[in-house]
Length: 261
Image (cartoon, rainbow, N blue to C red):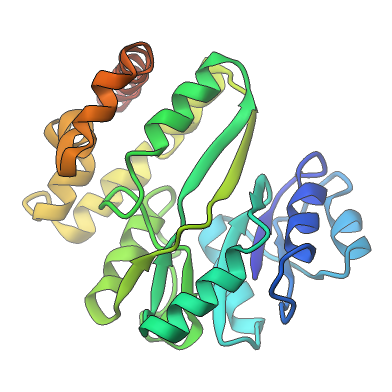
């Protein structure tokens, strides 16, 4: 279990509590902190986590956490995530029984207000697609692909996911994790998306602009339509017209930020 943090004193406690409350108990809890200036480290130590300091970005933190870990599996989390109580048990069982090497974990967006519900609606379309990424993985497979590409900021998850899929078998676990986005702020949301724009450009350079998967991940056709209608998902759009319109408004705002960069 590798949790990456930076100034997360408001979130880290709930995250760690959900880990401790897991039905699966043989868990090594590692927190890799990017030199927080608040009480993040203090709180993590209070809950018995092994705490390490590492930066400058999330990929470096995750790779370091994996290197110092001793377990057979890795689950990497952000500090604002909360686990379903049976998540780790379900992941281990699926890997052991079905021979799966890495798992996608359904992500639910929680918080306050209408736009949080819209974000949750949007995220429900992504699980197991090329705009998602495996989150639970066998450590030996993680090591075989050399972990995360530390030169990428933003799409490092996509890059890691496709390298895992190239040599391992993936699946989807039923148990969700909950991503606490608190109260939605449009300006902060768009600023975060814009911050990752340079990373997306580096990702495109790495895999090629004519790569079929890259085209899906960054292209308008799949991101604005394909991912929401494939495999019968279009029915959900029709059943939730208000969320559908609001979701497309958000997608359009993100696209505009990308093209302005």
